Amino acid sequence: MKDQLLELEERAIEEIEAVHDLSELEKFRIKYLGKKGQVTSFMKNVGGLAPEERPKIGKLANLVKTNLSQRFQEAKKTLISGKGDRAELFDATLPGREPLRGHLHPITLVIKEVCQIFSRMGFRVVKGPNVELDYYNFEALNIPKDHPARDMQDTFYISDNVVLRTHTSPIQVRVMETRKPPVSVIAPGKVYRRDSDVSHTPMFHQVEGLLVDRDVSFGDLKGTLTSFVHQMFGGDTRLRFRPSFFPFTEPSAEVDILCVICGGKGCRTCAHTGWLEILGSGMVDPEVYRFVDYDADIYSGFAFGMGIERIAMLKYGIDDIQLFFKNDMQFLRQF
Image (cartoon, rainbow, N blue to C red; front, side):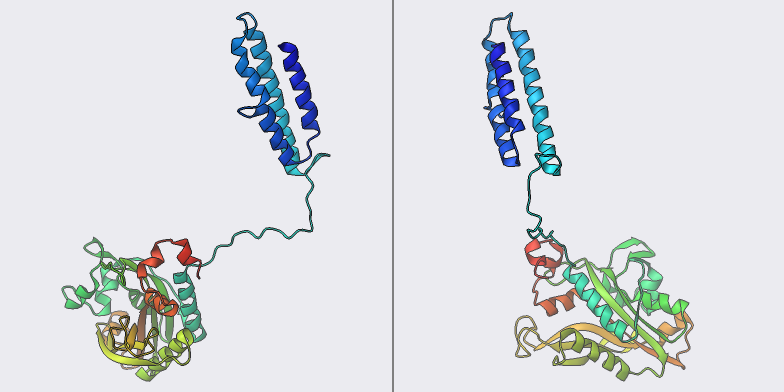
């Protein structure tokens, strides 16, 4: 039995020294060290030997298995590393395997595009905190405590005076507190409201715009937003300004574009009106200037805000806002 085992070891060593590629090495492993391999089978038969022979033959079998396993690992390492006489040959002229590359999320893509458009118009990108004081989120934007306008923006309160911001508009006040006119900024970021359905989520993204200087008119606002719409959706896109209400702008207007789904004929997406709302805007209310020590008799300005998810849905023809947050790779790879 001992001689058979030593002969098996000698034969296995000769075979592994003749191996020159990984496929042959794997065949060696299966032949000798696999579950049904020759060494494994030999060890199973040790139990049938006489009691006085079992310890010696068992110990020798373990040594043989350990020796062959060690030689197998060394040969594998040599072949994989490409070193030594037995290194597996490869064709260096073959084209390489291109690694998988990630890409930006559609929301990020739209934010970058919006910021680039306004940056070309002279707006500077700024950011502010997600957790905001009630003063900046409401009061300094002409929304005092117990004002009905707060009902439109039910939010998450951390304390009586601290909230998750409901819009990016607080950045208007923060910027004007620290800078004198002229001011022209664009502010992207996350906002939070108690909404959740196919077109709303508790967390979403907005971009806020503010421009304050001498002799700024509603015509400047209209020209700026018209240029933005044409750059974002195409030069043939029709848009309209519709009277609206925002506590911190007066006059205020919603901006609609001709429905990108039906071309203005009327469909379920646009509620058969032919138009889709994309953003809110208006001239900065003089009451807001009072909080930042701007002279409303000298300076005027406009502000606007848009939901990035809404812009992305219209730009890419997406009908469910929740797709942006489900991490569905089949959906995300389209962008």
